[in-house]
Image (tube, rainbow, N blue to C red; front, top):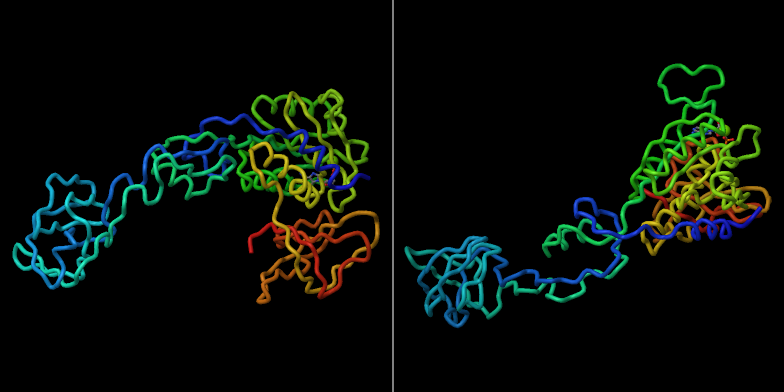
Length: 402
Ligand code: AMP
Ligand code: MG
């Protein structure tokens, strides 16, 4: 058996970043920038009003209430054409440019109109309710550094700078195939020995959650020829491939055999000192990482979290490869036996009033008991030994939601 960290190193060495390219804004959510974004123009582009009201010369409002002549109306989207003279005010709507000559806006609630005049009830100070050009972003400013993970706010900023695209690492296209003669995807009654394929559905969903582009490659029987064909067909359309099943010690575990042959000897078949997800195969085929995840449903998900997700995040330019880990409080005994492995217990993590996460088992801990993975939202790392007692601290990998 090899330690988890050693297996992870093998994966990360085989997962260099994809080539960055311009990505359209509406496809860039969750992508990572490959270069700094520098503003070519200020935002806001011009001084404008933060309030509906009257644009004035502050000096004219000294000794309010005062009466000013209403010289016109400015809606958002219109350009002021005339300079405001002394004793004048302009009715102005939020977002409209401040007319030349004005240095303050009086909110409409502090005014009343009387015919062609407006009564300003409170004196204004220069700058009141004005939004200056560049107050959010100055021209020439570095807005985001390289390696920024683009969220909705980032996309909005890019749009406000007039960028239709951003140079970023593309979403990885990742193929998912399930291997096993027993597997079916049908809703009908199972024939003797048949098992419904769950791994493809969990892995495709995990990829979607990881900002990758999942590619469903279907179910492949336990045959060298079929697995070879499936992987070869996938490589031209995928940046990486996840296969589940067929990496254990069974007589029909052909995934590792095929990976070994196709990867020109680069494939590593590992027994990782963890539970679940001990067997794991990883190789590079035609420059693309191929992950051989174990078939047991919980194992395939845990293996995804520990190996595939960090590898795919490295490929997509992320600096932070791992899930957040916290020191949680075990609210019950989480017992195990010594076996030289690090155990990942499926747990429910709940934020406590003490500011710490508290964890409890989410159900049966067998690697076939997927319901505990579904009901849980975290994995508690139980070190080799007898386990953790109620009230003790346990390092916990947060998966969410909480
Ligand atoms: P294997 O890794 O191929 O030896 O499979 C280990 C166990 O996981 C067996 O009980 C398989 O039937 C089960 N299994 C493998 N692949 C899947 C899958 N895609 N969905 C559900 N169970 C699976
Ligand atoms: Mg199998």
